[in-house]
Image (cartoon, rainbow, N blue to C red):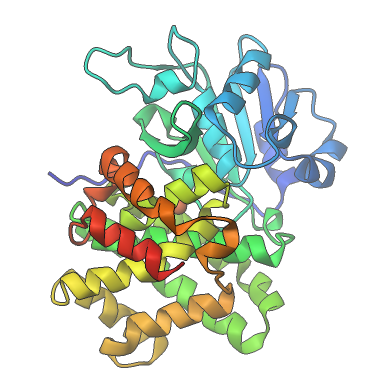
Length: 374
Ligand SMILES: [Fe+2]
């Protein structure tokens, strides 16, 4: 069965001040953000609500333990949490908004039959400051589970943000590297959801529009200078949101699954770890099933990049590497002896994602994918 989910109240404003004036934040509200964003956009507004900076609790990507420590510090009786940041901030707020009597974040991931279903404690307002995750419009989050030392994703409709607020002002200062990795993550959301067996005509409309917008933006910055991505900030932000809407229904797949051991075990940022395995996964898809839905994607890429369809995937990979050069896995301190363990872990723990693959991959296929980018 396929379905299309979209529980989103999207708000478009030009500045953070405008958003605050509309919402009148105060007692009962809480801001989760990063300190540099607070210093630049929030401090001068003199809001009376509580605030926490994610990096106070975790220097890198958060774990379930990080989320538990923030949970312990939250004031009682919150009405709204405003999550201003990238995927880690928004996902953390979404997890904090859910509660079970065990009062731990890992309990939210317990999907065994009879496990206690979480309830929602407060509403989340999601305000993205990267152009990547789409977390502002999805019912999903991902985090490193401390008990397993790998990242896991979770879907729960209670995690849909009450409002998703797109403010281009907030992403214009994004350092180029964060723009590049986050937008490549969005592009991967778009293509994985486009090929997913759960895709619907409506989700594919969002996937394909996101692909067009991101590739057009990439061609623009390659032609005009990387720093000029800012000219297209709004388009990238909207494309990431479209890709989020698409994967919320159709799901992500093997690229995300294969990147999780790299993100969880080696703390490689999400967009970057996805890019590491992206081209290799799609080459494996093409090797295993050259005729099928992949050809629709190739036709779309060919149109966007002005190349023949049979060269489109490679042209796209080359463009992504121009936007953000990729390093081999060996440079991250990963040993090739770990690949089988990674692949077996992915096969055992990431069926939620692997079920959305264009074509099934075996453990052997996955080892070959890691090996080819070593
Ligand atoms: Fe992602």
